[in-house]
Length: 343
Ligand code: NAD
Ligand code: WQD
Image (tube, rainbow, N blue to C red; front, side, top):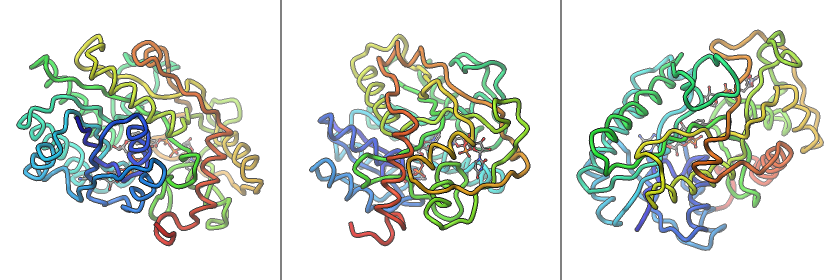
């Protein structure tokens, strides 16, 4: 009973490998390394004391997927593989539809062929579009404002259609809010290539001197200090939510064969609150200046967490100080990510 983890060499996937291995599951990682370094998997082995089976492959290669599912006797899939940069998706939408939508369709076809009928899918709070109310409940209307978000919605729809066609499929759609942080060992963490798009990696690069200052996008939102508010969640909490979802699906305890559930803390922090929290954790000054609002950004976004608590018996436990402390620990131990540190 092995779990296939697609995208398992990436930021969230590598943390998921640790949590699943520590819970006693056998795993195989499939990743094309388009946004990852396989050193992350050596680190997973170092943390868990277990070897990680790794297949360097693309989820669009259906024949290869079928071979892997059969070879390892997989019973379930946790599906992280995909492209995730909102800005890039508006410039190259085809790459997003191909990797995310076509890739997931091929993965599902391979699973159907091999008789593997359980998947956890990495969705995103971006599927809620502009919030009509807060906190966001799972039945909030969905809409997408960019190609990346549309790929997530299309995949969600694909899963709902397949689940409705045949009750033997089991899908857990997990809608992440803003994952940050790193494993508390400092051995694995987020390793963005180029200029970071997201707030936390950008802040870390100001703290360690790689960037001069943070641009705070917008200072006149209707929020407590005028800057955007988001629901940041520690990646370790997030992947523990995956383990619970996997267990609920596998035990047949889910109320339906396809559920969508938020993974967030339920608490929002502003950009300036994030800056101050990171200053506390790193003991560094984070220089910033205000810049215009970023296109497509909403003022405020945070999760309603009751469904996750009820369905998964899970709630996030790590606070903002832990998110910042663990991020800083990872960055200090790996100043150039995985590239220049020893495996
Ligand atoms: P990541 O880029 O670190 O991980 C994705 C992994 O998938 C990478 O290792 C990459 O090499 C691999 N990959 C990409 N395309 C592939 C393909 N065609 N075949 C095989 N492997 C492929 O990103 P992450 O932050 O760990 O995100 C994981 C998942 O969670 C993604 O689906 C992302 O859309 C989703 N998500 C992320 C966030 C976030 O803020 N990080 C928020 C919501 C949802
Ligand atoms: C957070 C806040 C910015 C950078 C994105 C995707 C979403 C999901 C998570 C994948 C906002 C502000 C940021 C900077 C800033 N990803 N900010 N200066 O936009 O909530 O979500 O990542 O699924 O789909 O859209 O996260 O970290 O980019 O921004 O002021 O340099 O920080 O305006 O208020 P976001 P983020």
